[in-house]
Amino acid sequence: MSHIVVDGEPLPFTEGQTIAAALVAAGRVAWRTTRINQRPRGVFCGIGVCFDCLVTIDGIGGQRACLVPARPDMTVTTEEGDDE
Image (tube, rainbow, N blue to C red; front, top):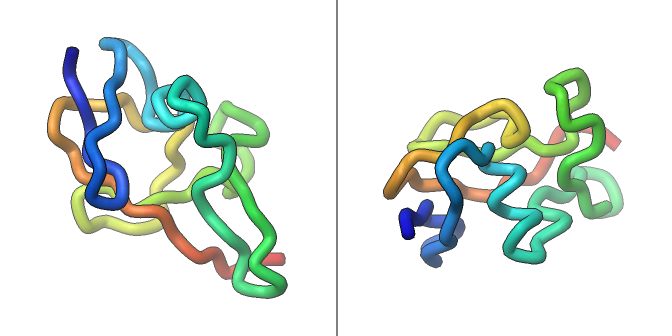
């Protein structure tokens, strides 16, 4: 099984899954916090309209996890957001 690396830990995924789908399948429902009050966020709309599922992928921040297909060995880092 292929894996992505999330915050330094390997996370398996199934071909065709987005990063958000792989995170949810692994039991992670929140992977970002808001700047104000550190409120947890994860996938909300699932279609790229909102910004709740933002992550850094291979060093590029602000990417929506619900839109990016998981690829073997990609590096994903969780983020602190700029909104409430």
